[in-house]
Image 1 (cartoon, rainbow, N blue to C red):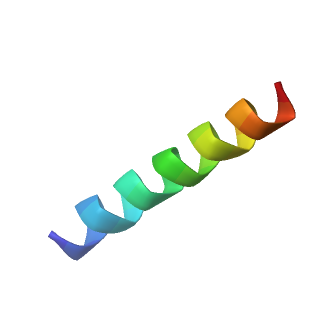
Image 2 (cartoon, helix red, strand yellow):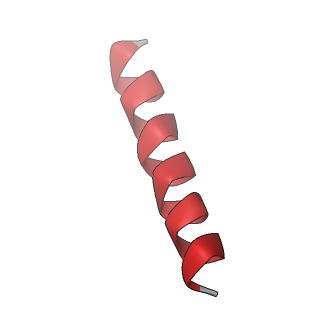
Length: 22
């Protein structure tokens, strides 16, 4: 479960970063 949470966080962070950059 911890791994899944970290993975989701990474995706969310990447998405936010992409959204801010765009």
